Amino acid sequence: CSTALALFRDLILYLSPVLPLTAERAAKFLNLPSLEWKDAWKHLPGGHRISAYEHLMTRIEQSTIDTMIEASKESYAGGAPVSASTQTALEKDPISPQIEYQDFAKLDLRLAEIIQAQPVEGADKLLKLRIDLGGETRTVFAGIKEAYTPEQLIGRLTIVVANLAPRKMRFGVSEGMVLAAGPGGKEIFLLKPDAGAKAGMRVK
Image 1: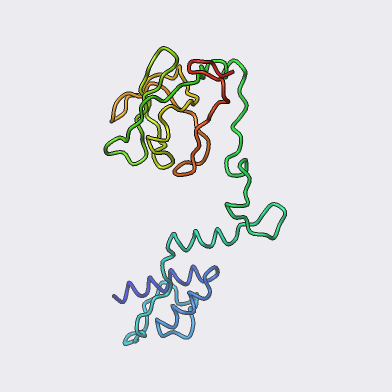
Image 2: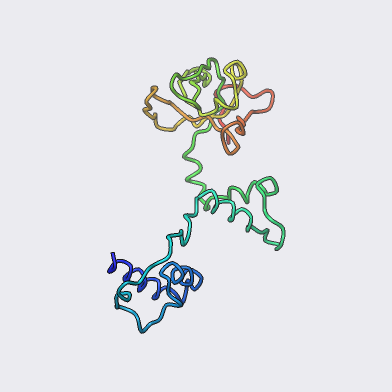
């Protein structure tokens, strides 16, 4: 125990230039007037008594760090804190790197009518949709359960990525992707075409 205490004193001694207050509290705990470099690598004097133990520092929880970060955020103009409600859509989610037209042209975007919609057992966010692409029907799983009820979707036109490779999921195979805007959860919004558009039409 004496060796451990001496090593503790040496470690605090080496840290004292950057942690002076901690070094002072450690000296008080060790019942020493101060920590001296000349005493490094030496045992404490025989019969020396230390003070009652007290925490030198406490653990910083992640929630405390998050609060400090939020409080320190400032706008680019300087001074005013930035809140999520005052950020623009592009500040929250910047535009992705540029692509060539040929890359975009690979996407086959089509209008589709949602003819069936039902919850997926065991999934908190998914709805199972049956869509009509104007002559072909498919099953698509969409993470929009928090924003829409099945009754709100049936008969609605929306935009899907029609040439996306089928994706095997735990609940079945998804044969496309429904396009929506928003960060997710309850704040997600299906894209809706103007009146006159029909299922199967290509989106250009």
